[in-house]
Structure formats: structure tokens, C-alpha cells
Length: 199
Image 1 (cartoon, rainbow, N blue to C red):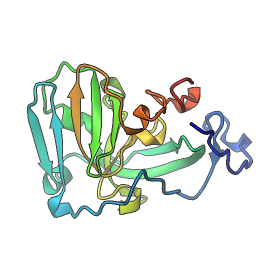
Image 2: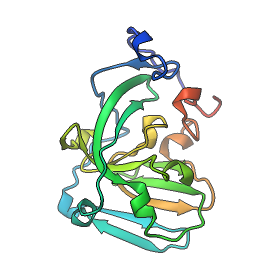
Image 3: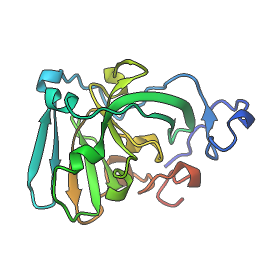
């Protein structure tokens, strides 16, 4: 796999302790997708958690919006080297959905409406570390940024925060997702520059 463009190298000292190595800060919100942007009306949207035994729990848009809402503010870091500080989201903690199912799984695969997948350790989406977000900066999440709903997992590179997510599949074994199968790092810690499988 070829190297990633380093992009703009702006002043970084103001972000010491917040800017992972190899990243540059941006005030824009670049749009990066592996394919066409799906358009999913909220009346056809649903979110399903499937356990390792095949049991499912599904929420409609209205049911999801009736759940306890949180408003996390977080720095996000893309593997293409841009970082954006203090992004403001509104959504539901994944803890709320996962508390509804019984599982002994150690991993989860996020699955999107366009077929995209991303794998994660279960411990990285629980404990207040991950959200299903439907609002960005006070506005409905735009389709090109993953609307009507996407994952937000700020402590990992942003490819793990699957856009247009439709569900989580709990698994006992790690199952690499779309980019992980194409050579990206299995975990994706921006502070350790885990971009490719060999990093």
C-alpha cells in the first residue's frame, strides 16, 4: 500500500498533547468514503445488535431517539493525517444498546448500510468510549458525514467510526473489516501511528 500524503503542516505547538504524531490540525471536515454516499431516510433506518448466538435486538429511529442522549465533545484523527479538535456530537452511548443484550463476546464488527465493516475489541466501544451519533455541531448529521447516524470512537483512527452504521455484530473471534482486510492496522491507535498492519 502506498504512503499517505502528509498534507498541510501548520503550527502544531498550540495543540501539544492533543495532536498525535504524523497528524496536522484542520478546521475543515474532509469527506472521505470508500464508495457512493448512501441515502437512508430515517423511516427506513434501524440499528441492530446481533449476539454471537444469533440473537438480535433492533431499534427504530424513533426508539433510538427516545433513549438517553449524550453530547460528547472530542478530538478526531483520520488515518490520512488530519485531526480536528473539539468536534461536537449528539447521540446515544453504545453502552445503552449493549446493555440490552447478553454476550460473552470479546469483539464486535460494525456493519454499515453500504456494506462497509470495521472490527473493534468490545472493550473499546464500552465504558463511555463510543457513541451512535445523529447530530454534528448542532445540526442533523449530513449524509456525506455518515448521516443519519454513524459511530464516533474518538480514541481510534476515524475509519473505525463507521458511517451509515446499521448494526453491531458481536463475535468471539476478531474478524477484520473492510480496511483492515486491505492492509490497515487491525487496531488503529493514532497515538502509536497504527496506520498499516506492519506498524
